[in-house]
Image (cartoon, rainbow, N blue to C red; front, side, top):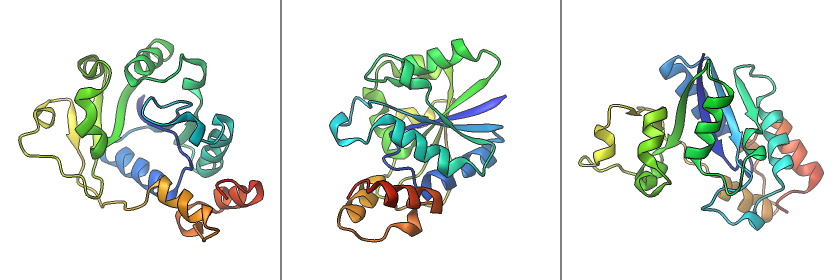
Length: 193
């Protein structure tokens, strides 16, 4: 089964995440895309994140009506902070019958050489890259010549979770960027206020 892994803190998950996941799944005929909720990304301050269970719950709410898009708490049982190479190895050991694809934004591809063991990641999976606003990958980028890295031609999504949190923090409306279920949950819990 071809399975895309879209790692993220999802603080909170928003419509652009869902659109990108669906676009990538359609592009490479993926059977499923798993939204892997990361409890502690080594590049983010853990104290600025909602509790992992809360973020996971919002991902489940956002994907409930889409059976091929699934929330995953797999990294919750792994050592923290979570490094992609370690998580991918654990995924492959736990699900040997699946062919995994790592999904990432172009901004992450630019920092990819500084990740823990990027060569080992490419030994394990193909990487599907979606464009991000204000992120241009130079034509001489050696990683773009790698046969296991694929750049999708897709519409740019100009929303980020940090912008949404900022608007919510100012009691502004962010309902257009969130699924109704996630918007209602955030409102009921007063998250990010």
